[in-house]
Image 1 (tube, helix red, strand yellow):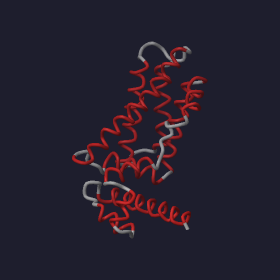
Image 2 (cartoon, rainbow, N blue to C red):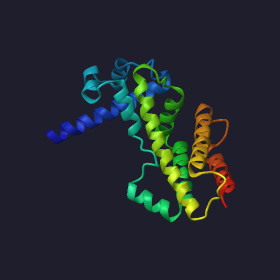
Image 3 (cartoon, rainbow, N blue to C red):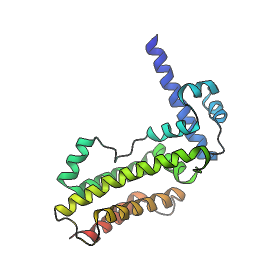
Length: 204
């Protein structure tokens, strides 16, 4: 009976998150209330409060459900970075781009993140969390470039931090424009070529 109850709770939580993602994509985060989500998910408002304290917590859980490829296990990530840092960056970039292109929920999350959410009021906390996660990703990329420099794979024209900022700006720009208009270009075709051109420019 306890196992069934836990399973029911897990299913209800997932249904709420699915409903929230669909409504956030359709009408934006600020215009979607918890009542809207409850009605769309076929649950009571109390059921939402059982799982989430507020809309911010629900939005955060929706994002965390789709883990980023950069968040590999720490030991595995460190090993791959040390063995071949540029290959590591190439691998995680291709995995990320591929998932964005082929996983509808992953795409929808970024579309909401970039274009359907105003980071003001209660959602300001999400912005701070996003900035922290972004800094963590930049740190991973920067360490990869630092190791690449130690191995003589890249030149001294850019510091590891400058190279990391350049790469993040490149990928973020591609994602922002692609999620805004997917007919503009094929992300899976363009991104690796542009990424490789960037790496060729900083190699020794």
